[in-house]
Length: 136
Image (cartoon, rainbow, N blue to C red):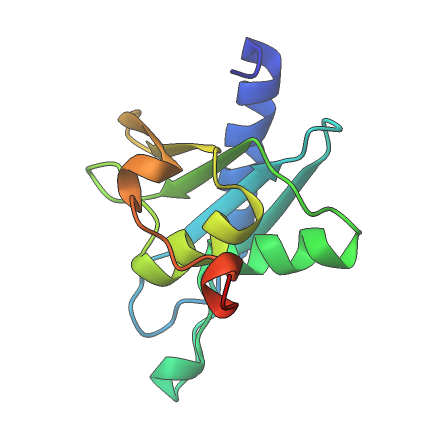
């Protein structure tokens, strides 16, 4: 578990990213912040598109930004929303996170101060893994 200052920085990064979300259709802005073992924090926000399936969730934007920086492992992900209840990542984001952060702690926070935590394995107990791509 990250220390209190690091968790505060993760929450702040996720909320700051949420402010930049492009969500004109759903009006559901989301920010996400990943913590790498190096201590680096990488954030992302959701980006919607009028062709709805072309939109991208905040968690996957953060993963893409981290991979561009050469980061491939994460210990924590914080998801920030304006919902009244903490919101876990969607199924696609859970699958993407399982590739690079199978043991990560997922923390969901709201503007109203509600918070929930899960291990990714609780949210996605049977991910599709690279080992399933091979006949081993």
